[in-house]
Length: 114
Image 1 (cartoon, rainbow, N blue to C red):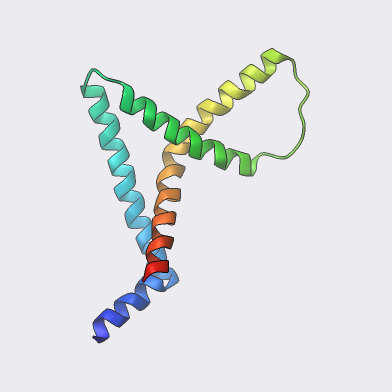
Image 2 (tube, one colour):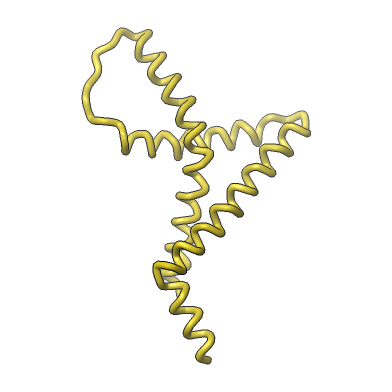
């Protein structure tokens, strides 16, 4: 009984939270890489599009957190370039941010239910 209590204490500690986030990050990133590599081997590109949208979502949210809140006045072409570049950067950043955010949410859920 003491082992179960000490494991629960570890899971609820900050060190346990960090360990769970690190392990889940590696697992989720591995799943993403496997899905993307299997997409290139098949003829369908739909999983890659879904993954890019997922990465773009998480990357866009993280870029909105670090962007200064100022209003830019640009012509329409400038806004098109702005959103195209921000979208591309969002997908690239999202490849690394998405596994972290997902693993953090899963870890918080596990800690809350233990």
